[in-house]
Length: 443
Image (cartoon, rainbow, N blue to C red; front, side, top):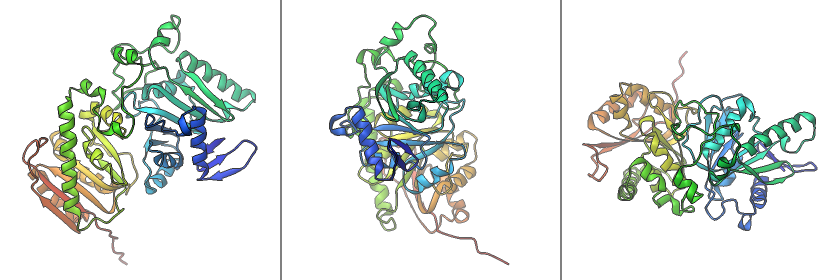
């Protein structure tokens, strides 16, 4: 079978909509011989990258399996489909599969998926497949549904043979092949790399390359080998979902964060989120918030504190804190790196709630315009959506001056928070709600 947008096509003809996605997901699990044909594999498959995702129906159906997908649509003629996906409340984003790395750290996903995604995986010596290799965890899967996997005409055979040969040189193996779908697996360790003949292409990346750097970093036409620790352990050491959300990830030591600091961050953000919702309880309606962005995600504590709510969070690591994004993914969450001196690649009116912790003052310290950032936040926020700004008092005072022009003055609340372990200086909390308004027409 093969997925084409929202359509599930089966060998022999016939198309099924929507409900067929569950059959497709079960088929993938069956091809992988997972217990009970459940793709989550007991919580060991949690983060998925869906490339060329259409309207993100694959990612939508994964949510009911406790799997979260970063549904990625290239910036091409199909990019408007992502707007539809976001309006449905499905985690998704725009991206460019070109010359720069995708804005995610290495070893972020257990599974990558491409179903008729119309991507030339062989271009530039297979550099896009090497980018997938960087992003997949040890033993991660690549599910590929495309005519090249089954068609017998000369052109598709040529593509398949070239792709198969490249992936074998990359030490990937075919786990299963059925009808129009093939599943590859990335190696668990460096053992296969060390057995390759001298001069085999693509080469291993040099030791000085940093695989987690992803903001404006060119893609590399090389294989990222594992660290000595990962090679010996043959895996990530992550807990299954949902335990991994609260368990300290092994990569904490890479960013110099102790176990005590991690637990303290988690506990503090739980208390802060409880206080936020108390502050909004008179105006926030049940099921009115679905798409949330944390503009300065740190270790993911804000998103983790929302685990019992039916929402998803786009965790954004500012460029100066990009090394912490790996912790977001290791907790079973999703996110991206971004420079808030620039606009964010998404459609207008994408999010129901924006959380900005100290990001405005950091933007000011970098010499960028707070006014420009507020306008960008307004662009991303839906009518009747909420803005939570936790920052220095002079920043809050500046924001208040712009609130009438931004139509954020329908409802607002400002408080001085209690001091906690993460308090960096004197802080204020401003929560405002964007009005649903329309410019009056004049003759």
